[in-house]
Image 1 (cartoon, rainbow, N blue to C red):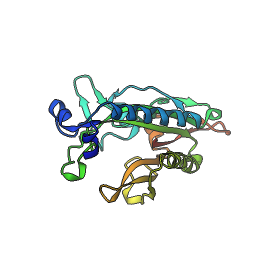
Image 2 (cartoon, helix red, strand yellow):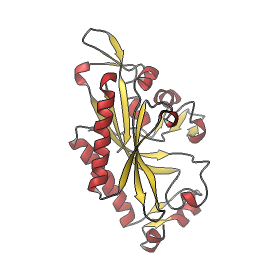
Image 3 (cartoon, one colour):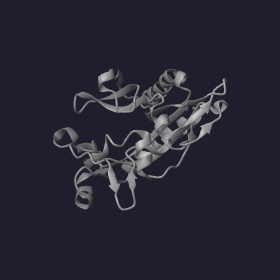
Image 4 (tube, one colour):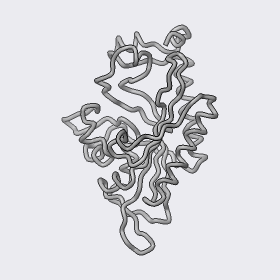
Length: 244
């Protein structure tokens, strides 16, 4: 945060004045760097076979439920109760719902989507020196990868997505490690998760920068997303997501 201030590319004080704590303002080369990274990530995913999708930043409650955000994470979400609009905490939410209530052709699988969105999180329990700078903020930009496949291909697809995320960190020259999350620490909707943690020299520690998860058929069951297999049986799809 000191380097960002001295270069006049990050301005925490002015963002706090206009919007309160846990906000930030990027200026000049700071804003340009963010825009460049977003374009680089999206272009790389497109080269890897993902289709870029522009999605709404607000969804209805049933879309939050389908992706697994509700009811568990209600307290960490921003909500306009009058219009039943929920501000997305990640592009995973709208991407999960692209094929809701559909039966897709098995020949179209896997379906790969990537999307850049602003993300909104209350972070109501974050405070202190651990979140100085632009960590644990209420609004941030993220590029998401999302895949829809057959449940039996989910683990192989998870490995593929993990390798794609690793390649980005390698090309950026960042020191990182991969953590396989144990069952007791898995997210609400996840069947398997790998976290990628980047070394932060100023803090002398690793911090999670990306998470790749297979949700099995959990999300598909909630949103009734299915396909016909070679036996003409209607089967729930498998879904996977990763911070790209």
